[in-house]
Amino acid sequence: MPPIPKISKKMILESSIELIRKDGIENLNVRNIANKLSCSTQPIMYHYKNMDMLKEELYTMVDKYHSEFLMKENNINPLLSIGLQYIKFANEEKNMFKFLFQSNKFSNFNFKDLIDNNESNLQSIFDIVQKETNVSGNQIKEKFTILFITAHGIASLLANNSMTYKEKECIKILEKVFYMK
Image (tube, rainbow, N blue to C red; front, top):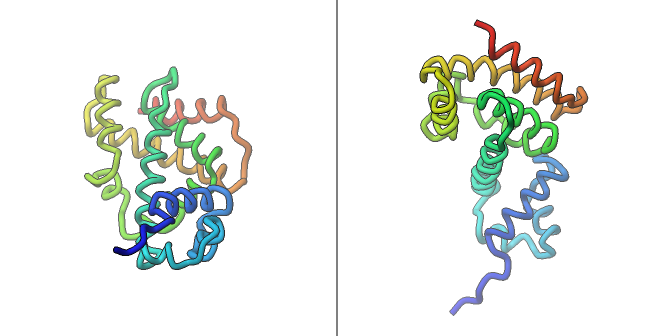
């Protein structure tokens, strides 16, 4: 019977997330993961045939974490709350934000494909917003698109250290965009 691996997939994923969080996706490689786990590269390559496979699994985990972060309660309109949380995520988790949204993951998508993608977590967000507001499905998608582009612009500036986060300013901008007709 072969020996039980001492380095699990979970350990690899957790160490990889720590590496991304601290040092950025550009420093995620088998050797750095192995150093973090104090092991050779062999256990990592045993679980993942290549870095693309590992990054796909990592992306799913980080995306789930991001979605949970977005759904934290605020005392404002649910769609505005999600926009604000998106911005906060970029400010608090700069490297995770870059990994999710600035790593060419959506290079073959257009914006409509992204919004209508059944594999994304967006439909659950749309459902919650529709339940809590008097806005129809298509209107939610239109408002979401405009709000997302605005929130993403602010978030990108924050994640790339080009500006300082000021929550009241962000809320004011999001409200102006949201309530425009």
